[in-house]
Image (cartoon, rainbow, N blue to C red):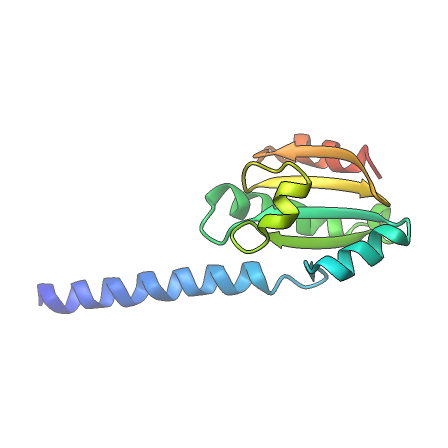
Length: 133
């Protein structure tokens, strides 16, 4: 009986982890970072909100619904939202001096106009992003 419960616990843990990973990487309305696409967005002069995340990061998971909420608001309708995977895009991290995941950046064209690191307070994160739009 104990062995069956252990196996079921492991299966449940794997399912939950896979669900969280899928939810994070398939966020609707977000573009997945690639260097050429990001450069084109910067050259267009548009406002770009960048979420530097890691699938294993609890802070990133706490930020995700707040950022999704911002993405859905009218104030950000002409804004491009980009997800940068902390583990996969080291050149981007070096170029933008990003030492850790759970970093949110706002660019106006090529100029960085706001940065928030590890902020999970809804009001503070919203203010950091919205004040830069």
